[in-house]
Image (cartoon, rainbow, N blue to C red; front, side):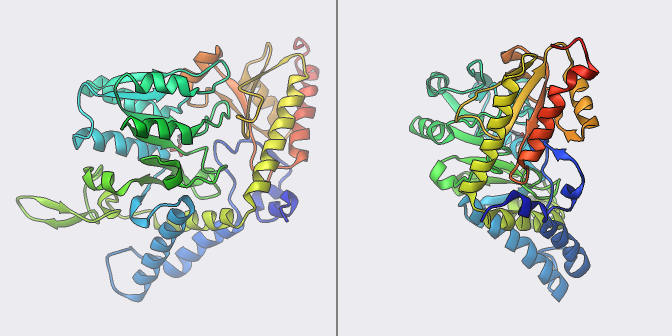
Length: 404
Ligand SMILES: Cc1ncc(COP(=O)(O)O)c(C=O)c1O
């Protein structure tokens, strides 16, 4: 039985009287994740894949067991799952490796949507500035949705690669990512799926989705910061050059040349964040035990209540879609107030939301605002959290009488 009240008992930090509604920035961590990291440092800490004493074996087993758990969760082979520092590093790895390794060349067209987080926008834009690739932009509608016809229009310009988010972090739009990958595949276009917001909320099987690559971050799905992953189709990873050079990713080094290790180690230079991977694996084990249908229904319901109730307040403007394409993230502004003032005011009510451009300036520009407040819900949030935020917003005119 899915019960958010019961679930909250697994999250020490949620014992505080705080409506934590900034889950799109980072989620809280359950005790099993914190304990697993502690256990690793107390009982298993050693470098991995380097030594054959017992402690090193334990650390290596914990590291590789996490890889298998995470790979299994997204339907990939363990060799296709590379540990990185997170989504940002995963995408930078791709941009660098594609260009340096010749999979992308000057003159090639790269499409991105304007809904992207800067992490899936700037690396591709910089590639075009520095190395002469050409950017093709896929527009959204006024509410941040991407239509398949806009995608087709872009792909038919002879694009080599399409990088797009499965779920927008600024407006909470769930994109038609399966259909988009299908369209790209039909045209032989490589796909990079930004799963940073998607994977925490939707069960994504990369083989069924048909993407070539997918990047995601542990900290947005109960895991620790500083660790994430890049999934890549094996044939493509085999062809790619490493992003970082150094220990662990080599096979043999001579004065003349270096050969590289097999997958996934070819892309994992240096001592890895083993404790991070242990926490990541444990986070996935926690998520895998949940009833996902119920979790999604609960999150959707909370976000829908927020949208519906905010829309009834005359001095509130809510952005993004208000239908089934929206999930968990609610972006809004109070007319006449800067979003930073609103989030600071909400803080005085013990409500944590983010304000700003959410690292998605092209999207915000498209909807005509420089910044918003963003409330983002996860499965441990309750009606009480949502009600507290709504009560605060309804009382905002007491603090700022000119509003409304
Ligand atoms: C859609 C999206 N992509 C990429 C990122 C970057 O993730 P990270 O900072 O974990 O690398 C974020 C983080 O907010 C995001 O929401």
